[in-house]
Image (cartoon, rainbow, N blue to C red):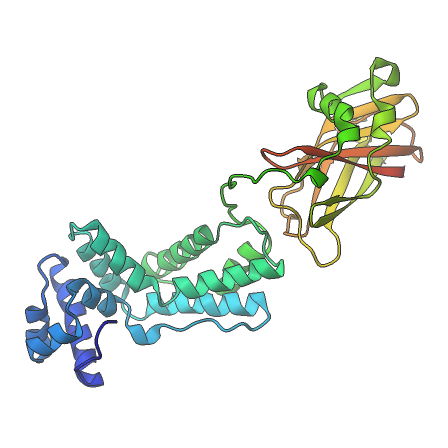
Length: 364
């Protein structure tokens, strides 16, 4: 905040109040100066200049008083930390009337110095934005949030929800509403950050023996049946590792299942086989960033079904996700099939993992 304050706490508070009142009264910050603020506060102008030689710094402190700044302690509980961070945000919006906050925002728009506006905004948000970002980063490190969440977008969404409820609906941002905002984030339905440039692929992440199967699966038409005689590389697919794969430092486990529904009053489409996989990080690890399950091959006798996988919404975390495909063949219930799934990340190669000995379950 610059040099030590030459003002006692009461005088400093009076100066901040005066600056805020002038901003609200005139709805413009470009013509505000230390002399006007000092006169309204009843404080000697030289002392205000000494404390705040930069007028924009004084504006920033008047908008969000520095004494409200506080860090969020590491509580070892992501939800508790994020709720505390959310309360910082709510304090920032409830510390003054809504009309006053609107006036302050409009007054800043009259400043024609982009750097000054950015400084005022950044200073004004330090009461809660930095604390929220730190709490979100800790939640990501613990695996409570996916590693590729867009923390800045989460903060913007929370800020927008709180502001709208306070300013336009006049509602109280109580504990139940805070829980709603927390659930939206911790349930996994959060914005993802844009993919970052990928580093070169480590050699150990590649599966050279499976290159022919990967190429076939990448180029073949999905959503249809094949005979082994049609060129299905069964021998190469059989070399894919079973159940798990090591991707550099990431251990990834894959389980799978297949099902047919024979419940009464169902169409033939409903009785067709569906198949899916669960992809999970092993131990206490997390999944590689942007890992996806793209395609599935289900083998039965001399037939193969190839289909695109669709990820199940609302189930992805930093440690696991589900993906499935429907409208499969009419293979008999209780038949034993073998599943091969392709895993990939943008800009990188594809890996194959087998799930052998899968029984087609059924309901009737």
